[in-house]
Image 1 (tube, helix red, strand yellow):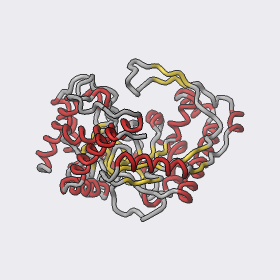
Image 2 (cartoon, helix red, strand yellow; image 1 turned 135 degrees about the horizontal axis):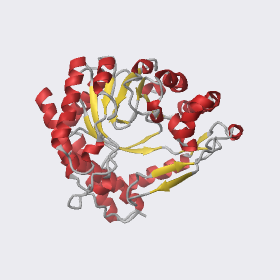
Image 3 (cartoon, helix red, strand yellow; image 1 turned 180 degrees about the horizontal axis):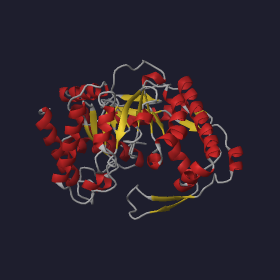
Image 4 (cartoon, helix red, strand yellow; image 1 turned 60 degrees about the horizontal axis):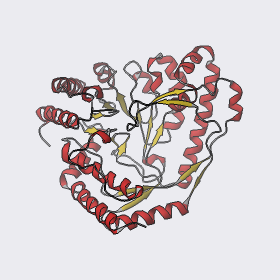
Length: 408
C-alpha cells in the first residue's frame, strides 16, 4: 500500500522536475550534446556524475521523508535531479519521463567471485576489494557455461502498476529493456582473479587468457542475441556519465544504440599486447552497434592508433592520467575526446586555480587540434562533506567556457 502522503510528496517533486526538464534551454542543451557526438566542435557538455550524494545535503534538500523504501527511492531520484539543476552551473542528462527497466534474469556463467571487502566509511559505496583467484586452475573452465536469460513479465507488470500508482499523471512513465551496452570483460575477469595473476599470465600463460576471452566473447554474443530477440532497444540520455545523443541511429535493434567498452587494468601493458587480448576480441561485439565509446579511467594516449581498429568508433576516453595533448593530437576531428578531469581536486577543498588551469588546458588543446569533446567529472568518491566543492568546480569550469564560447 502506498500512502496518500507519499503520493503527494513524490508527485509534487515530479512536477517540479518536469517543469525544469521541458524548457527551451533544456532542448538546446540536448542539441549541443548531439552536435558534439556528431563531431561538430563547439562548447563542450559539462557533466558531474558518480557523486557522493550522502555528503551533499544542503538545508535538507536531499532528506527523504517518504515512509517506505520503494517510495523513498523514487523520492531520492527527483531530489537529486532538482538539487543538481539548482546548485550546479553545468549541463545535465535528465529526461522528460521516468524510466522503469524490464526484469531480466540470468543463469550466470557457473563461477562466482570470492572476495574480501574493506571499508573506511560505512556510508560510502566506494570500498576496497581483495579477490581470490578462482580461475588459477585451468580445469575451472570446464565448469563455466554460457549464460541463459529469461524475462519476468509478471514482475514488469507489477512494477508498472506500483510506479503508476505512486506517480499518477505527474510525469510520463516509460518501460524499457535495453539502453546501451556496458562491456568490460577484463573488469569482470579481474573480479574472478585479481589483477596481478592476469598480468603474470599475459607472459606465462597467454594461451589460457585467450581461452578465457574466447568464452567471455561468446557469452556476450549470447546476451546480445537475447536482447535482439526479446527487448526493445531505447537509448538512454546517459552513455556512462556522458551524453549519448547522436545522429545516425537505427529505429530499433542494436544499431539503435552504443557499445561502451574499456579494459582499465590494461593501461600498463604494451599496445601490441593490448590489441591481442582486448581489441581483437572487442571487434566482433562492437560491430553489432551503431557507435562505440572506448575508454574509462585507464590512460590511452599510447594506444589510440590501436583503438582506431574498433568498428564504429566515435568517442575515446581521456582520463586524468592521460596526456591530453597526445590524445588530442591523435584524435583531432575523427572522434569525440571524452575528457575526464581529476576528482582529487574536489576531494578536500576545491582549488579554483588548479581547476581553472585544468579546463583551460583542455579547451586550448582541443581547439588547437579541432577536437569535439565533452568534460565529465566522475568517480567522485568524496568531497569531504563539502557540497560547495562541486558547486565551485562547476562555476569555475562554466566561467572558463563562457570566455571561449560565450554564455549559454
